[in-house]
Image 1 (cartoon, one colour):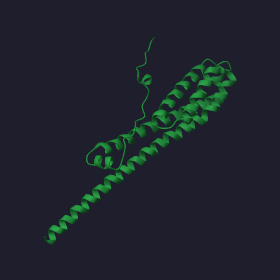
Image 2 (cartoon, rainbow, N blue to C red):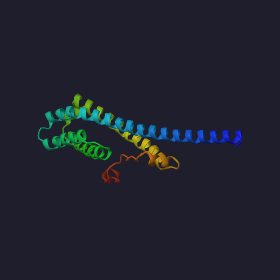
Image 3 (cartoon, rainbow, N blue to C red):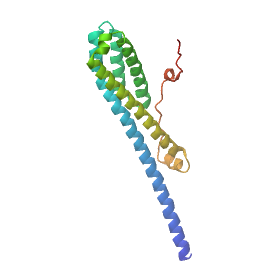
Image 4 (cartoon, rainbow, N blue to C red):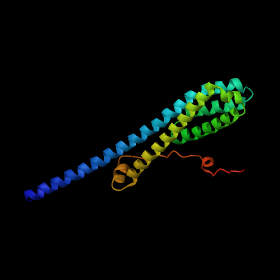
Length: 185
């Protein structure tokens, strides 16, 4: 074997090893981004969960006979706090969102509550937090898409299988939120 052949083989081996290392590191980086983006959703859900008791107490003072609605919000909040994993958190979060919609619908019946500055401030903060949750979900799904693509595309799919990288689950809206609303005049 000539020196030129040996040098070419060494360069080829170094290139292959470098490519494998790069693909592996890319999979690690993407997996960590998925975890980080999920944590961002978690942070916003916690912020919303921290606002809810204040909101419930404010409404309680005005709408004492709406006890069932307030209990449903509290129960749904507890469900979010105790949930783990994307699917469980997503389901609990959807339940809480529905309970909050009901709470705000009830608040419409109490003009003095709607005029209360504390209620308005809490409602504004909650609305802002909902926007942040929506953005965090979108970001999470974007990162999951990149990660899942890396796990499925050749040749990184070979490394993904070899090292146990598993596809992640997307955050999805429940079926009732995907339905086209019926508008009547």
